Image (tube, rainbow, N blue to C red; front, side, top):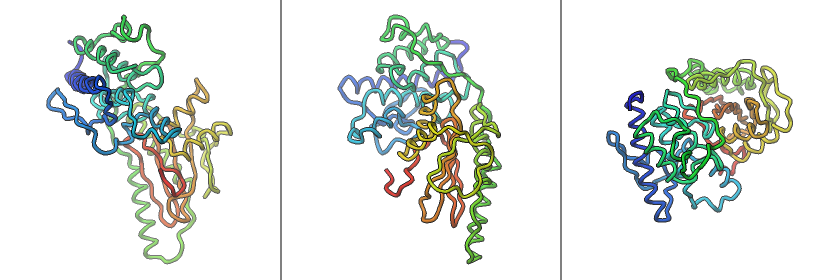
Length: 347
């Protein structure tokens, strides 16, 4: 077991304990449906699974399951084994990286890990037939890695005579060194500016000046750049934006705009239905395989009367601002978060 750090071994042991507990439930015909770190009691390098309690945070929800519920909301109370496989993979990702998977199947580990370990995470978080078919297959791979964490993906039991006879069609995570997560000064400046606008509104009865979309998008680019930089990604400053405008624009869009009506319509449908940033990213990738999906700028009715909602989303991460009588901005720094529909009847 030389070559794998104590943190990696602990993550494997904790996840293996959770997978064993889930396997016992599945043999009884029951799925947990609420696997995330808050449902796991960890003591040292061992773990016990708690019964599901309360909603699962959006960062730990299975995106594939979310899309299924959008098509058929009547299945909301019918969790399945595949959802537990995703939850176990998200738990292992968190133990290895220190945070939730930011964009579901497109997530990348932010700390070094053996390739076999990274592959298990990738396969547990994958969509469709590439995900582990059941917990038995995932448990066999975890047990092999507990014996030898350096085991290569092609030497894992799921390849060698296990439930899956050939490698699944997915690219294992690229293991990248994490940068120190420093929250950007740009975010602090935006929040401070928002507070000054509010204070000015309280002192001055005159209506505030029209919102400056250019300033909001520029600040959003800075926040996204810092957020993605912490995961080894980048947000080029001159990258064209895919515009989805559900209301008249409150100002000119800074920088180039991508002319792609088909992508705009697809992105608009997902955003209006409350799709997450991860779902949006995956849908745009599927629409144009082999191309990096563009950043999406969505301008929609705000939650307050007369306000305008501005959402900037890229690579499964999004930031949001609401412009109107007050100006506010928030970074969804904990990963993808399910956006609420623009209309008042939020799901």
